[in-house]
Every structure is written in structure tokens, then in C-alpha cells.
Image (tube, rainbow, N blue to C red; front, side, top):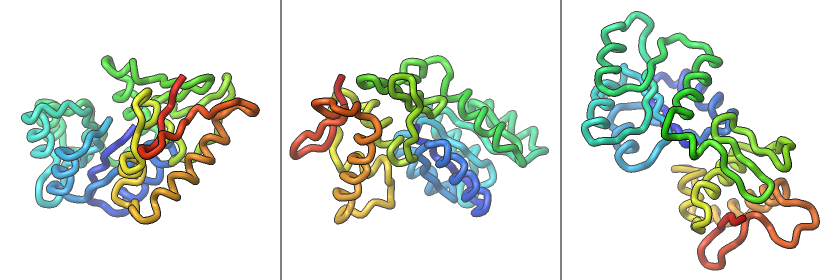
Length: 225
């Protein structure tokens, strides 16, 4: 699951990024309204965490422009504790939920899980290949019922491949999705190969004749089965 975090407080942004990355969410971020709008209209997200008080363009204006453009991505508004008027206006503009600052990490994660499992998303909750299952809500991967310990990058790679199953995914698409703006096109191919190798070692059954993640020569990778 890919989440856009829009927050201009550097300390809070860092804390939330670390928390959500630990939960194996793929995080993109923006610290001002213009940058947020650029990302929202250029990329696809499963959820947007949107602060109202932002430089350049405020969160309510961002929300209004999104909905006017028929972008239906779920939005969790982050509001000041006493701003009842902003909360009401945000819900009127199409926000799916709001969370008043300061909030607990447990409540934030619970709100995120609730939005990601709303009607219309159930078909994406459990992704499978062979004897491996990935739950997009609990963020757990199991093999024959046993939980696998994947790194956040390994989880994001597997999740993205399973979402696109049975279509192959190119290396550049994988890099852009999992590493975002941080990927270096000159070294990324080797980096992806290392992560895929480690992921295969964890999900494949010992002694199996072929991997659950297959290499498509000249293209990238695909999951089948």
C-alpha cells in the first residue's frame, strides 16, 4: 500500500514516516501544498494523510481540487485539536475521516487500517501466489500459515508484483514504486536483483523447481501461480 504523507512539521513528518515504514507501508511525502498537488495528480496512492495547515496551498484547498478532479483516493485529514469548523468543512469537501493533533500512534494506525478496508477494497485485501499469502491490511506475509519476516522493501516489492499479477513489471517501474525519488538509475538494477534474491530465498519452498518470482528477460519480473 502506497501512502502520501503531507505534513510541514519536520519532526512530526519524520516520526510518522518511521512509524509507517515499520508497518511496511510505502511512504511518499510532501511538505507544502504545491508539491502535494503535483504528486497527487502525477501518481496513484492508496491513502493520503493530509495536514490542513500547509505552506503555499492549504489542505482543504488540496482536498477540494482533488474531488473536483474526481480523484477518489481516501483522505485522512490531520487537524488542530480545536478546529471544529475545519473538520466540518473537510468532511463537506470529501474527506473520509479526520484525526486531531496530538494523536496516538495506535489511533493513527487504526484509522489507516479502517480506511484501507472500506467497501470496494476487499478484493485487494489478500494477495496470493503459490502457498504464500500477503494481507494488505494486517501487513503480514505467510507461507503455508507461517509468518515470514520481510523487510519493508521486500514487502513492497512482493505487494506490487502481486497487485500486477500475472502481468510482468519492469525494473524501472519497480524502482519508481518502491524507492520513489531515491533511486539511482545507474545502480538500481543491481539493488533490485539483491532484494529479489533475498525475497525469493524467503518465499520459495526449499527444493522447488522454480521460483514464485520469475525473471522475464529484457523486461523485469512476474509472479505466477
